[in-house]
Length: 163
Length: 93
Image (cartoon, rainbow over all chains, first blue to last red; front, side):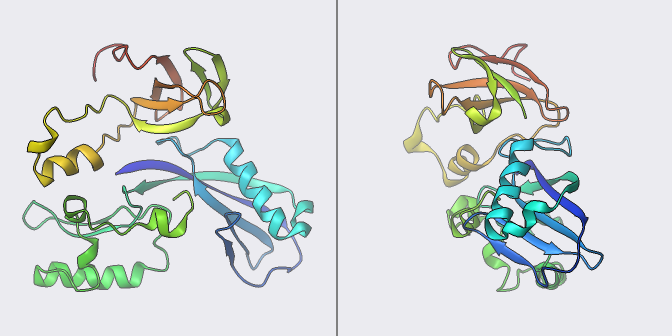
């Protein structure tokens, strides 16, 4: 498990121009407009390990360039603030949900840059695992043992972006 | 933006480099005798310290050579850089 900074940014308030979330893996940025009017965007992690809750500026610069490639009108938007959160990334960028070699110790970790939409299913299958002592069929492939068997769930390759 | 000193080219911006993760991970001496668990430990299990961390970088748009950097992962301070055939400054941990 490696800890990386994941940076995001918001712009000043703007009139509603962007009614949905858009994510582009091709230029790699995701952007939505908050109800108040800020454009909220993010992209990939900084390449290096870090706990400093900040990243390097060129990563922010790259995600802004990607956003403007998608929506040239955003070029007029000024950045209000940026921040970096620390995300825990596994070797295949998929989470680990299941048992550990320690009896009665279970893990649900390694979500990296993902997880928000998967949380209900993760909680449900994790509860099943703890209650029965056996993984649910949905989270069985996400066991820690996959790094020994080699049956990885390669989100790095599937998404082709810097998780 | 990190300022990293390549042992051959001198101080350059981070954007000239490629990150290579933890340094000083020795290749198994007897690969044919390793169990799956030992292979997993070699391939996938790495340290993730908060503080000084010895890591590999490659000067990808410069001399394209790999070298090691000792960097503090909490403060982002680049403490020193050194060649692959040099030991980690200040001991192993």
